[in-house]
Amino acid sequence: MALAKLSLVMTATLLSAAAWGQSPIIYVCENGASERRVEVRYPSGQPLPCEVHYSKSGTTELLWSAQNTPGYCRDKAQTFVAQQRQWGWQCQPLDLAPSDAAPAVEPEPLTE
Image 1 (cartoon, rainbow, N blue to C red):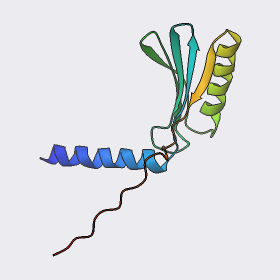
Image 2: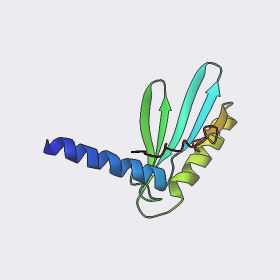
Image 3: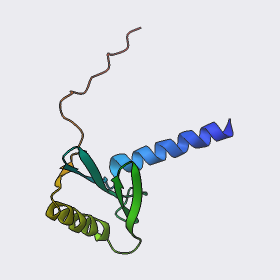
Image 4: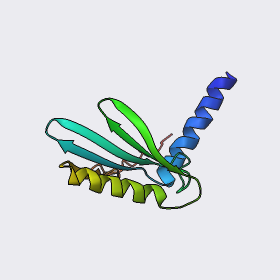
């Protein structure tokens, strides 16, 4: 029971950090049928610490990380994506912004 409560608290904390904190930056690069991803992750939901992950052929590796320099991971990822483009890859940022397509649903008032 205590483990379930701890899990619930941790999940809520992570979701709130993701919702209100620093959003990840993801680039999707394609060349023919091949796809690669360059992702800047913010584990704490804040600008630091940060990590740059590179995924290809079903594997992911950590390329860079930073504890003290804001913008370091973003800059490294952008430079790496530019290099991918020079090699012939078509890279686009993945938009992670919430969609405005679905309107908010107002709850029905309670009647007694």
